[in-house]
Amino acid sequence: MLKNAYARMYSEISLEIQQEKGSMNKVASYLQTHLSGEVLVSEKARDFFSTDASVLSVKPSFIVYPRSTSDVRKVARFAWQLAEKGHVLPITARGSGTDQTGAAIGKGIMLVFPAHLNRILELDTQQKLVRVQPGVNFKSLQETLYTHGLFLPPYPASYQYSTIGGAIANNSAGEKSVKYGSMLEWVDKLEVVLANGEVIQTGRISRKELQKKKGLATLEGELYRAVDGVLNDNPELIDTYFDTIKVTKNSIGYQLEQVQKRDGSFDLTPLFVGSQGTLGVVTEAILKLEPYNPHNDLIVAGFDTLETMSDILDQLRDLHPSALELVDRHLIDFAKKHSDYIFSEELVPPNNTPAAILFIEFDDKVKRARSKIVKRALKLLRTVTENIDYTTDPLEQEKLWAIRHSAATVTNYDEGGKASLPIIEDGVVPPENLQQFIESIYDLFERHHLDSAVWGHAGDANLHIQPLLDLSKVPDRQKVFKLMDEYYHLVLKMGGSIAAEHNDGRLRAPYVKMQVGEEVLALFQRIKDGCDPYNVLNPGVKLGTDLKDVVGMLRHEYSLAHLAEHLPRN
Image (cartoon, rainbow, N blue to C red; front, side, top):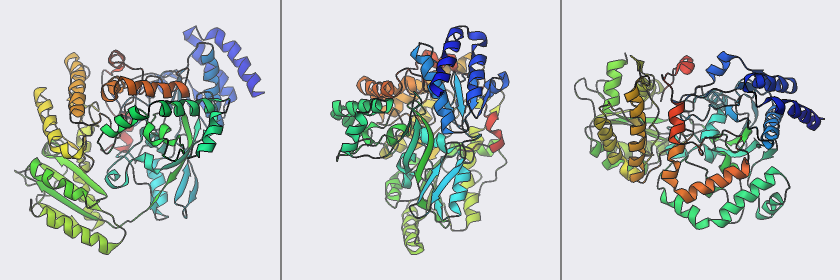
């Protein structure tokens, strides 16, 4: 009956789809009669979902709030049938719209998950696993886990208002990732709706099971055949590329190197994590968890020079801190000027702001072991600086962390037409190049007559910077692309990646080839074609967008107004 219903829908709609005006309302009307969730076509709703946290804007045709996996499957199947006859209606999956690369916007159908698919379905405290829907709020999940003595470590800075689905889509990371890694390491299994509406479950399977999957006469079978073919045909190319990137995080393209193990076992999960909805739509996830220790020790240290800080970073990393974060002098001075925050005069003397401040946290479960490591860290720090604050008191720690979170003064800046733009905010380099990386950023901003402010993950050498520009002015719009080009070349020259934890999306898609090369890019395209032969799923994200496209999508003003309720911080 379902197949016949879709056939009737298609036969009527395909006659109208070429007439743009009114055709989307007709599509929405048909879908509404077959979905349990809601479908919106109002101009205001479409305007709201035309932006995310990026500098880009694309207006969807209509919005769908799915209530179940079945709803997602029906939408995908419907779009597939249209695509088979040459009428591509793109599908974009969206959480809370915190994506900074333009991956949460798109033409066609916008699937919005937080409205209904927002539940924690199952929690197994013995195996330390949780099964969730993609629209669940990261903070809500985290708080629930805390009550059971567990937590999900790779939470991003936006965890208070972002979704688990978004974290999976971007392979997110955060301040704890120096010890615990990125989201990929914490995803056990996924339920995914493929481009044609098929539902699959990912997980590691044996070589024998892989052969059975490859024999399926379905899109799932085609997917396994495509991925296996890419891996078997290009082992040296894949190994060479991924071995060359000597960084702690890299979300560019697809994580091919983690799909197949030496024993021949196969798992598509790494392929979907970080794919930004371009290969399939995640409708459920089973996540691995870590025991939570509410007691930790925090050391905050100021350094007179970047060189002094860099001299001891390797030794601090070797102590396996749970966080090793950084803010620089320019960020502190900016926060002093543009906020009412009162900094500790011991850490930040009124007339002598440190060149950099490190936040070093230890969360080892055994207090005695933690104390021993902290003593080693303090001894090391005292060889290079006297500007040190150490505390185990949660309230004092919160005050000290507020210095790190003062980056929000920059990210939320929006005055006189100028706004803080997330265009070059996620580069990562080999840890030994961190000092050179920061100094090169200063040089870049000085050449373009811009104020610089740097913050981020010193332990991962993953930095965030956001220039203040006015997108309503042509010179500033041109400067966006000059900065991007120079910055990405700078990062790659140092052996880094242009996207560490925020992914590539539409914004960085034109530069993916510059990082991976033409041959690896072709492998990514083969994976995309095998999963989504009609290019329905988030087209233009990761692949298929050039600079001319980005210019056309660039906003004429930028703000985070749709996130203001949450006071975004970074």
